[in-house]
Length: 317
Image (cartoon, rainbow, N blue to C red; front, side):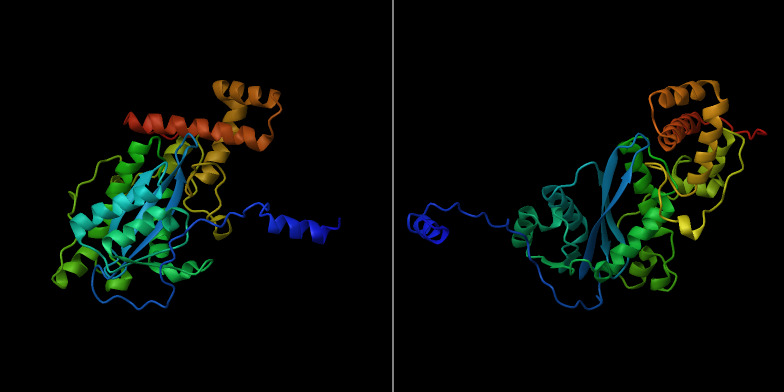
C-alpha cells in the first residue's frame, strides 16, 4: 500500500488527528489614528518592567490620556493578567469617565479573552498598533522613557510596597508639578484647568523625605551614598554608549559604575565581603558573577543605612 492510498483511507474513515487552531484574540481596529482634541478621547496603555533589589521582577501598567498627557494609573505588581487590567480600567473609568478608544500593543494580556469581553461589556473601542511598530503608540512610549529615566533607573526598591509608594509619589509629581513642553510648558493639571476640565485628585505637595521627589529636592543622590561605603567618588552620569545597559539586576544608571568599583574593592579588602567573595570563587563562580553578588550585598547595606536615617560621611579610600 503506497502513501497516497493510506492517506485516502485515513480521510475516508476520518482517522486523521484534528489540528487545533490558534486561540481567539481580541482583534480591535488597525487604522490611522487622529490626534485627540479633548480628554477621554483616547487612552494609551503599556507595560514597564523592573526588579527589586533581591532580583524579583515586577511590572507596571501605565495608562496615559493622549490629550492632556495625564498619567491616569500606574499599577505595580508581580503579575498583571488580562482580568487584572480590566479591573484597573474599570477603577479608572469610575473616577475619570469612559474613554472612546484605548490604544495598546499586542501583548498577550491585552489580546486575551478578558480584554475582548471587557470591550464588549463597556463599548470601548480597542485599537492595536501594528506588530513591531511601537512608534504608533508614541504617547505612552514617551511617558515610559521619562518614567524609567526619572524614577526606575535612579531608585532602588526593596519591597513591592515600597515601589508602589515611590511610584505614587512620582505620578503625583508628574501630573501636578512637572511642566510638559507638548502642553506649552504647563503641567497636565494646569492644562486641564485652563480648559475647564477636572484633573485627577492631587496628593499633598510635601513628599516623604525618602521618596524620589524628596531626595531630589533635598540634594541627596543615591550614587554618593553608595560611594561612601568604599570611599569612591561618584560618577554623576554615564556615557551615551552605556545608557540603557544594566550591569546588575535591579541596578540603576547612576549606581552602575560606582557599585562595581565598590564591589571590586570590597571583595578584596572588606573582611566580611572578602569571605563571601572567596566562597563564591571556591565554588567556581566566574569573576563577573562574584562581583555582581558583592554589588548586590552593597546595595542591601546602602538601603539599610538609608532607612536608618543616619548621617552619611565620606571617607578617604
